[in-house]
Length: 250
Image (cartoon, rainbow, N blue to C red):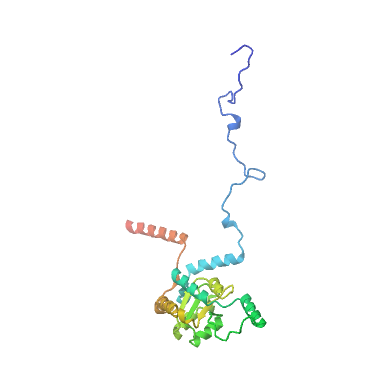
């Protein structure tokens, strides 16, 4: 080391410990302290009342015994068949308000002639559909599975079977509503179709009978619900293990 030069400064303390700026400092999560870590606060969220009611109702439908008349709405149409059905229904969707306004305006101005032939469209409205079923005019009835309250439609499959009208239960009252240009629809009915689509309607009726009408007697014997939660099943399994041990000791 040259004469008169100072030794280089080091970060190591003279005692041989860890440097001060390298020492770990415990975090303080009190007021004005360190930033709180991110947590999953889902269980602490104050959800709106309608969401709480929806969730509680769904849990109760799983836990409690559900009578067959209500439980049948859990057995909905197969996804592929439902896609075929809604593609078919779109062909006979009734005109919207805008289309009706444009048609009447064109007829009033003389651009188009007034149509005299009957247009085949899907019928909607629960009272209207019920009347068509009672008069045996409906060839196929489509019922939504999530109508609330369910008492509005839970008698409709029985009425259809009594009158010999094929019926289907499909997912989504909103999806049925889209067909008839409404927000939701509880039930739809097909009364008549064009000659070119009669074969497709016959296929849909056959599938409806296989999935619902022919299985009606079996469905009316099947209760729904009775599905317990994880905590209940864990406690039940623990009790069974304890009981088995006591039995083996004896």
